[in-house]
Length: 252
Image 1: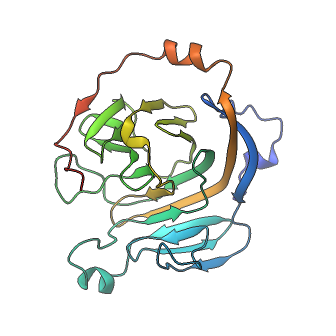
Image 2: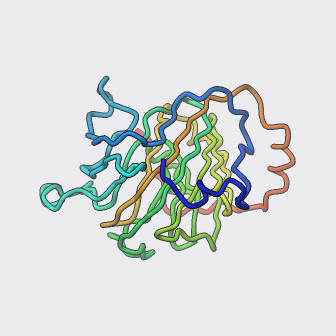
């Protein structure tokens, strides 16, 4: 839980808080404000010892100064791996049920700027299930992807991530639907058969060779049904065409 000037000014004019657009939250099933310093170590994804946070690809994470801080893997780790080198901070939040609402804040403090079209340039991302649904940045701006990251189902062409700026995000996930809101930014929505998956964990990724921070994480279970305003909200959304970015891999 980071301390900011706004925290000391309760009557300051704040942006409207994010509220679910699609799902109805029920009970808090996980929360972390990172008030207790600790080191985080990766374990096998299916291990019973896996905690709420599991660093990915050898990247290094710790809780300090009231936030979760991550950086790329060490030079030694990268030299020892041909692929999956951990060149950008990546971490998995494992405490997500099948259907949920998730809210968190994050910022990219530095890193190599993403250059679309360069094969080794790594864009930041928010991933819902491993290669199931992903919000990322590319040649078309910010995108929500489906079908193994091969299909663009929603896009915000002018939305960029600013290093040094905190972004608050709300993720709503149910069956074959995903809704991702950015406070004071765009909302992405997708409904696709490929979202129907048993993989629910959320992965966050930052910029190559950069540092990333995460704070104020809450996960809710959800009730039956939609928000009363969802039908009108969905109909008011601009129509977007799905775009095939590359051929999907054949399913085994």
